[in-house]
Image (cartoon, rainbow, N blue to C red; front, top):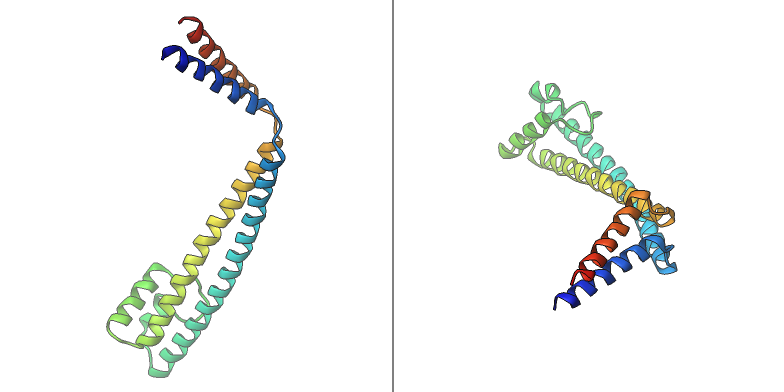
Length: 171
């Protein structure tokens, strides 16, 4: 059983060294290229979502501020600042104010719409950041297929093989 295990260790170390020194296969390259294309598409979709949700948030903010002006808003609407409608994203204080307004049903529909629109915008921004990191990762993985192994990687693979061979020989 020990000899079989040692033989398996040698074979695994040999395969690791071979994989490290062999060029990327056409299938690996195609897979990495596909992942890169998908990451680019995902980033473009995320950018579109950011643009759309930002526009929706601005519209909701304009509607909110127009309604607040119609009913004579309390001064804190301008202090937080929720209005005038030119500051997206809203601050945390503004979001708390909107929650309070929703709870107290003070221009509730407009407050609710602005709150939700802002949350959607923030979510789109996070998705965009995630998509950008995914694209960077896909680019790095694709580039790595063309890079030769480093001296350190080769040394580690050779050391693993040598160690496995020595363990087998000792049995």
